[in-house]
Image (cartoon, rainbow over all chains, first blue to last red; front, side):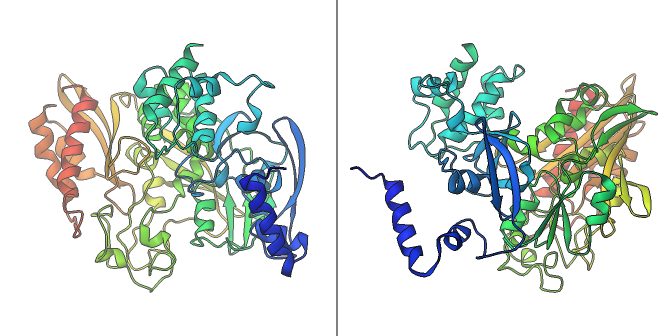
Length: 191
Length: 325
C-alpha cells in the first residue's frame, strides 16, 4: 500500500486531534470555527456539476470548503488575501478568488474548479497548452493560472501579448514562468 | 476571523431592517472578507446584499445611472459607459485584477478602506482603526501616503481609482435608509480625516449606497485616466489623474481634473481647472497651471516626490486628453 504525503499528514492530524477532541469538534476547528459554535448556515450549491449541501460556519471561505470539506485540493491557498490568484475558480462562469468568497453567499451557485474542466480523460485545451509550453515550474500557482486563462482565452477583446499579460496580472508566478504561460495562452486562443 | 451572525437580504428594505450597530453589508467581499481575516473589521453581523436588485446601467434624464451592485468589470465593459464616460471605464480597468473586478461592486468600491499598512496591521497603533491610539505612518514608512488633506491624526490615502473619475465628473451617490433616499455629491460623501479619521464618509448607521449618478458631459469623450504605480498592473496608484477637457480652436473652454493616490479622499483640482480656462492647449499652459495643484501639500519623509509627480502627471494627462501631444 502506498500513502501519499497528503494522506499521511491527514491521518497524522486526525490521530493527534483524536487525543483531545471528538471528530466533529476537530472538523470544526479545522474549518476555523470554535467547537459547537452556534449559527451554522446551510448552503446548497453545485461544484463541478455535482450538487453539494454543506452545513458550515459562515466564516468558511469557498477555498477552505473546497479543500477541507469537499477534498478538492487542486485549488491552492497561496496568500489567502486576494493578492496572488492561486485560488482562482469560476462561480457562475466568472473567474473569482475563492479565498475572498464566503461559502455562505453561494446558495444556488455553480462552482467550477480545476478538477472540473477536463472532459473525462481529455484535458481542457488550456491544460494541454500549459503542458505543451511548460507553463510552470513548481506548479503551485498553475491551477489558478489555468482557471484564469480559461476565461482570458474566451475574451475576444484580449488579443495582443500585452493584453494577455494585463488580463493575467492577477495571477502571480514566483518561479517566473510567465513567458511560457503567455505562449500557452496564445496556443489555446488559436485552437 | 471573529464569529458573526450571517443574514441574507433579498430586498433593500430587508437589508435596512437587518442592519444594526456593529453590522456590515457584504457585497463582493474583496475588502470586507480580507479585513475580517486580518481582524481589522470585526462586524458581529454580516448582511449579504448580493441578491439586492440594485442593478442596471442606463442613461436617464441626462445622467448615467449605475446600480450599486453592478460589478466593476461589468461597468467597465458596458457600451453606454465606454461611449458616454470612457474615463470611468479606463479607471476601472486600471484597478485590481480581472478576478477582483468580477467580484467587487461599484458601491463596495466606493466603501473600500485605505491600503495603509498600519491600518491593516492590528498590532500597530492607528487612529482610523483604534481612535486615539496614534499614527505610526507620520514618522514611519510613508512612501505611499497622502500629501493633501492630511492631519496630525491620519495621512492615509483613499485607494479607489473610479472614485477619482467620479469626483472629476461630479457624480452623486444615492443613499437609502429607513428615512428614505438622499443624494450626496461623491466629493462631499467622503470626509477629511481631521481629528476623527475613523469617520470616513457621511453614511449614517445602516444606510446603504443604492446608485451612482454621473451627469453626462458632451465633451467628456476627450478624457483620460492616468495611473502611475510601482508596477504596470495590479497595483494601487502612487498618483493618478482623471482629466476631461473641452477645446474650441485650441483654447481650453472647460476642464475637469481630480487626483488619486495623493489625497486622504479623491481630490478635485479646482484651482488648476480655473487656471487652465481660456488658455491655449499646449504644454507650457498646462505646466504653468499645475502649480496650484500642490497648494497646502504636506509631504512626508518618504513621499517628497509626490508633489512633483502629481504636477507632471496632470500635465501628461491633459496632453493626452487634449490630444496635443
